[in-house]
Image (cartoon, rainbow, N blue to C red; front, side, top):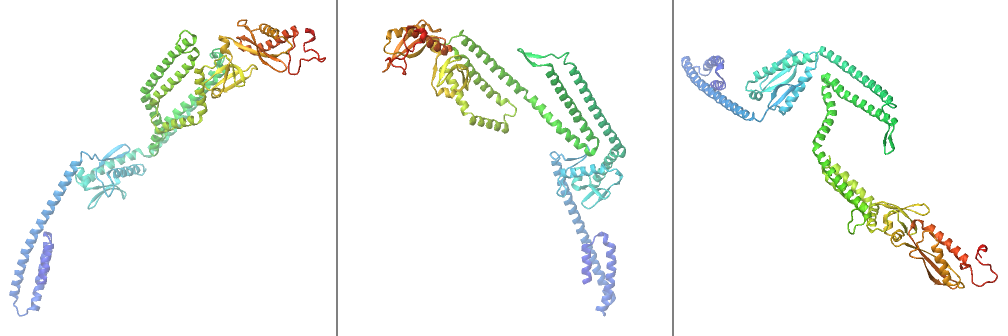
Length: 595
């Protein structure tokens, strides 16, 4: 029975291809049964045992048939399952064809085929890039043999090989994407790769290398000749410019000022011609260097990179310039509009300043200061309008620099702003104007300049004094010229005369001295005031009207001289604290020639 069990197990595990082996096993089994029957049951007849064996063999045949049927059913089920799985994969791939365009395998600008699926953790892009790099590296070898590309099959993959080096691995999914079998797809890829390698071999052959070296030398030679030609043209043009110094070139003058003489013009022309030479050489290098690098495939990518380093900034600048043209026109419109508004306001200021246009409560000397204020405000308004149209105004760096500059100005210009505000207040307070003789604290002089920051005076001693406007605001100012123009300025001087001299006579002498002084007005007449009666003498003050305040020191000098002359002629002494009225033999103070 043990042998029969072994037989049944073989039937269960076997297939139709094992029938021949099964027959040999049955023969051996029958022989063993005969031997065992003789040993175990020696008394049983041989015919009976053979009949039993035949019956058992018949049962084994029946079981074999049943097992064969079950095996075929299992194969059909597995085939049906594989077919369903393959059908589902095909439907999924068909649904992805619209979105998955595949990654191209590009070798030196030529697309060989597309990769749609990943493999072993590598994405389609990585697989395509890896194969492209292998092909490009292989194509640059000088002992390349394209016919050495062969196919190597395995259970799950088919590899495209070259001298034991795997180029690309093909899976069943790759074949499904191409609607073919793995073997057919491998053969198709083999043909494509062989054809491309033949092209690469011809491209990178020794003959091609020699041609590339030849063209490299030719480009270098051409660049050298162009450089020599550019230098020669520059020298010729320089000599021509030097020859123009005494022939074509003439001095450029502006309002009797020689702005550019011929020597300066020659230097400027030589400078710009030298700049043009360097620009021309730079353009030559811009063209020749990428060409040199593009001759050899190993440096071809460097050629495009170098060219991009030079061309991309230029292209970006040109594009930005073209895109900026509409904003530039907007800036021009704003600028010219503000400019002509300022011209109109300047015309009104000229009319007011000349007295042709009168506005009630608005003085003539306010015209130009007001014009300058309005012009400043209009320009500030113009800058505020133009700012958004400036290139880079929206960038953080530009805004940060603007804030930083504004902060520096605000921190360092408090005194400056104070002077500007004081200058505006002084302008509209009208304490003085250009040409007025004023006294500011202890400084007396004529106003020669008023600016937003300072006021400048010229003293009678011809000293130039610069005074900040903020200091003027905090000081008192005496204006001699304002009253002199309208009513006349009163000048005065004091003398001390002894009590022995009649006061009426003293008054007359002082008035005569004032009338005899040049620049003193006859109307109103001079007058005399007695300001004090001291213990030793009375104090007389003579007052006279003048209009020419610029000659004030000279007028005072003339007045004092006339006072001495008039008193000496009249025999009246001008007493001082050093003299007393009692005479004890002292000589008179009157000069002897006038006694």
